[in-house]
Length: 246
Image (cartoon, rainbow, N blue to C red):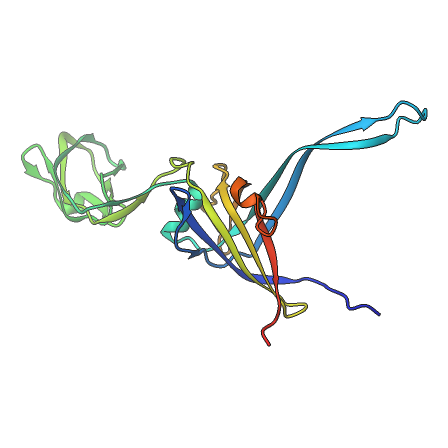
């Protein structure tokens, strides 16, 4: 009886940002519980008109495509940029003096311009506001006033340095995708390499979780026509079955 070849893959996924047509260093993107490839085609069917059955006697494949979709679990800054199609900016510590809050009412919660606030003080006109009259959340940079203050209030404070990642602001990056896999059904190794991939800007980012968060990603592989001239490389990439080391 012939040997049966089953497949049950586990492994590591890597992205390499492409700049000026060259893929940079590989970056392991952490635990990926699910990622799959989809091959798509746009076909035109031709029906003959001689048999009386109008059977399909030819299929023309006009276009092909390779898509991917999966889930990321680790949310370091680099993965957040990838998931959200965002850009990262390192914001330095700064001192804000005399920020106007206007007239505040009891129960008002106001967001100040920064995070991790230090040396925070408020003034009503020229009079300092006593700490008993407000509740400060220095980490998130918010303040709730416990009473109405009729004179315009100003705030003075120092912010901490922080990393800002924007939403939906960088749609042009391309990455080479590489998978180091092991087929646990056979013990053989398998690699997948896609020369050029571009993530879809569409994303869902849950903000409340009952369990560990998982973040969906999807996109498409773009062809590399120069590599496509080499049959062993392929237009989009290839899957390699690697023999066990002897």
